[in-house]
Length: 542
View (tube, rainbow, N blue to C red):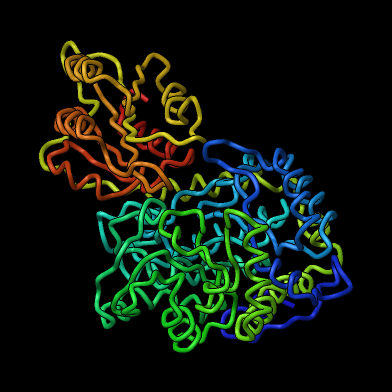
């Protein structure tokens, strides 16, 4: 039975037992309440914790609570499958494992394939998205992951948005809708469960919900016209879960509650008007936008089925159990939410058979994870994404200049995150083609005199590649620092400089006089390599 045929989207839920890991359905209020809790395993934030380093903590948690699954961070292709198999064996009931894999499961599993950011597909056919989704699904399922927290169904309508931007498939409905559908179809073709996020639309915010509580002031009619259609399309395509936004929408809920807390948004709109019958999952409850949302029972009454990334599992389970015993409506919602969560497990068991939760190798070959063919497709997609802006004046890159020699590559990053490699993939790719070239990084801590030194020496080079990374990332700065902006403006306007955005296309709007500008929409390794390949095509000496 196909995953898309057995219950996502508008279809009904089931509480039939998955035969792969258990012979009974959880019946007690405590066990059913715990099934609605998905804590994180591993962390790519400070402190950095690998999945295999978090196993004992999770086993201890499983000894106390029949939690429904995990949100996974910071795994790898070799250790994570073993760690997850150990946890499945330690659990009385099958565990659902979910992860953020908008750029492929390599986003969280080192050694797996990493694809460009979603906006890199804006100018590519939806078939490319479907191919990316299928490969990502195979690799995820082979490593023990069952749920993709994708596709992003937000429309990147606000250039000032610090957290959606290139994570969206585009800046218009015409771009986003067919690619959201393609992602769901591609994932379902392989059996991976999918999540449309962030309902009812996070694309028009100017605050990162990791840091605060954004507000979207659009009218209800405007939200219906721009924000909701991709979610309608996802529901019609059979998406399995919908993730809430920690965002306030006064036109949809006059109380001022965020969507995560809002019955008018989650129950009346999502369930009633859009007809969604799958599981509603909160965005991470550790985010600043959710700090007032720690009453699990109230979240269930609003319409949330799965509580993601709770701060304290013991407190959350106890609170749900106490509320269920005290309030019949809470008890009804615990049972209803459990049924939807259990149906996700049933769907996987139906498709892949007994033993799949503990041993995904019965259906998927782990050796295909990160294989050359998959990486080649990611490289092809990265090259196809490149868009060059028409130059405002004659472009003299690599043109012969008396007295100019050598090639310089400058990478500007306004922030670094905990998983950035010590050596940028751009540097390695650049040095392979230009072993005598010079490479410089302009980071948040780079002194202004060092930037001035680069500007003073710029005229000595025959060609300069100036690459800028402006991308959304949780709990990290978005946008260039003032000193970096001034540096990029000065350098990019010189006739022998290519300005390249390895991220948001809007960064190029700040530099309209750049001699030559290109955008790759992503800073993943494949995109950085594609940029160097493009530079080589401009160089008559290569």
